[in-house]
Image (tube, rainbow, N blue to C red; front, side, top):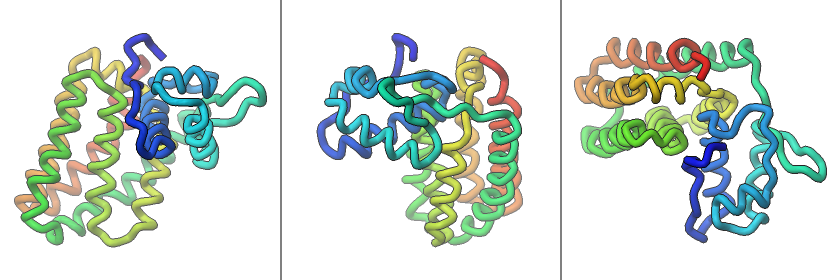
Amino acid sequence: MSSGSSIAPLPKANLRDQVSRALRSAIVSGEMEPGGLYSAPSLAARFGVSATPVREAMLDLVKEGLVTIVPNKGFRVTEVDDAALDQVAQIRKLLEPPVVRRVTPLIPAADLPRLRRMAEDIVDAAAAGDLVRYTEADRDFHLTLLGYDGNPRLVELVSDLRGQARLLGLTALLHSGELVPSAREHLQIVDLIAARDLDGVESLMRHHIAQVRTTWARPT
């Protein structure tokens, strides 16, 4: 990870969960490089915590297939090939757009300001160049939308799929100035939900997910 890493000291409450979320986002965003070897003590120093919650969090990520254990050395970030990434994007396109279309009429108008704030958090993270925060905010937004379908298994499945993805092109997107326009698509999604535009929101969701294997997949 670079010296400008967004991994930073964490508050002491719920350390295992916080470390797990931060590491997952760092892996998905590509800040922790595929194939890279990381020790619990070195990561603990970055977080400003002991090595114990880091090891516990890493074991959670082992179960998710995001890292593997390297005995006496640490944890290696799992490498995912292009075919696997294509498959993840394909499954997400099959699942998410029609679900968001279905829940669009069901989302209460009172919830729209909260969804808009979540979308704005994504834009703010993009503008700040904070890829870990961007990835986490993006994940929360998408899973929140899917949650309106009342199917926790679906939310868990998509969460796992997102964890298996590697958005390695985000750095290139950031440096090219395209990340903020891409982030603003989340605000457009909220606008389309507010307008109850079922066709529009499904189409934009499909386009948005497709970027994972087009625009976002460009090498850094």
